[in-house]
Length: 79
Image (cartoon, rainbow, N blue to C red):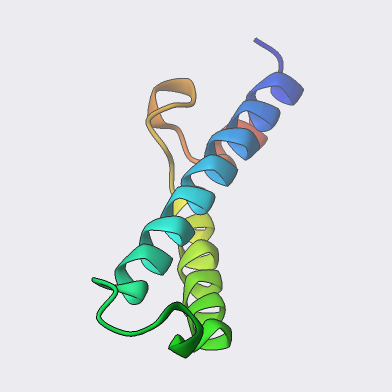
């Protein structure tokens, strides 16, 4: 597999993980529905979910199991 293929595969896998993390964070902040849908602070939910997605991407730089046996982005880039 070429460098470009590995980096592309890493970016896609890391992006999917970040989206899943943001969705899980938003779901946990929305809670049980004890409050009305319009009573939720959507800006805060979006902000916290966005931070969680960024942290997920930063964590993925260290390596994710879906790509090249869990190699980090730096290892892939330095081949």
